[in-house]
Amino acid sequence: MNSPAIDLLHVLEKWDNGKDFIPLHEPVFNGNEEAYVSNCIQSGWVSSVGSYVDLFEKKIAEYVNAKHAIVTVNGTSALHICLVALDIDHRHEVLLPSLTFVATANAIAYSGAMPHFCDSSEKDLGICSTKLDAYLSEISIMNDKGQCINKNTQKHIKAIIPMHCLGHPTDMESLSSVCQKYNIEIIEDAAESLGSKIGNAHTGTFGRLGAISFNGNKIITTGGGGAVVTDDAILAKNIKHLTTTAKTSKEGFFHHDQIGYNYRMPNLNAALGCAQIEKIEDRIAQKRLIAEQYLREISGIDGLNFIPEPEGTRSNYWLCSARFNHYEDLKEALECTNKNKIMTRPLWNLLHTLPMYAHCPSSNLDNAQKLVRSVISLPSTINLTMKNEA
Ligand SMILES: *Cc1c(COP(=O)(O)O)cnc(C)c1O
Picture 1: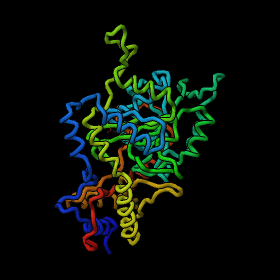
Picture 2: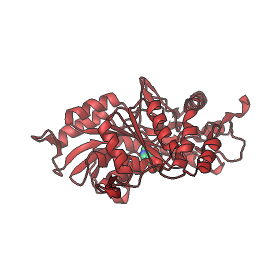
Picture 3: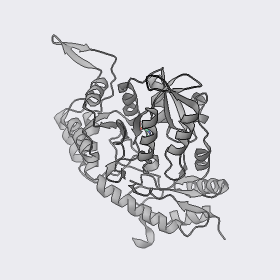
Picture 4: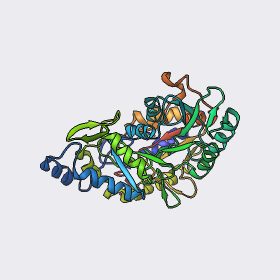
């Protein structure tokens, strides 16, 4: 009998993308990309001002059903500007999963606040709100201003950044009720989950602010780019101001009324984004077909389980993933697939183990540790077809 790793390799060998290497995820341009980008070049408006920027913001807001969207140079800057806009700084701690991409913690560090790590759920791979509630009740007290104070550090735990892992929505309902209890603001890291929904509501629209990424490896791309989405008009206006170097005009001269950031997405990138977002629902439909095929193929493998979307949600299945029963099998699978030019990858090394975040406070992280030693992400580009079905 084969090991589950070899069985998985045989499943992955059925994929065809017309090339001899199957990447984990690559950008696909099958719409108006060239037309919009060349239009942009011909117009001369390639930089920080232009009609595609406004149009792309409008399209994102419409798509996720948020009142406002502000586009930025990348997802990390989108997260950072959310923290700045909520006045988060060195006086504060910000909760986040240890199991996320490093950018989530970096954005907190840029703001001056202290990252504070919490555990994940084995079901949806996002923050486990039950464990979070128990943890906060143990380590924090509410002060007379209604602020949640970490008893060990005396710092105000002001916000949390849940992350919708690999496209699967985190349970925002439970998380929101815990956050309400402790008066903690929610900024969603929806970098990976554009198009994912809980019921009819898009990820990114449950917190005060949500951040999206359009990096080259995400479900749609602008080359590099990000966006903040929110229903709060005042925050939206402030974020637009902050991302455009806080520019005002005073008696006709350039004026800046605070330390701003040059975080605005260039028009050239927005042109690409306008073309990409036109096809996002087609993409998600194709992703879901790939997920179905994985579910079917992997269900026959002992010791390996596909990770389906959480109940009551629609995942964008950005990176289809599966879970081994044994760490040894994960290691074998990573080795034999990549050696055979089929790219797979494990989750991220937990952030509290990285040198610059090793000193940060954290809860018990048992679930996250188990997930890192069992989950494998699989090729998930929409150009994949199964050889025997072509
Ligand atoms: C991609 C990603 C980001 C950052 O996005 P960039 O556009 O690469 O800066 C942040 N958080 C998560 C979870 C991501 O996957």
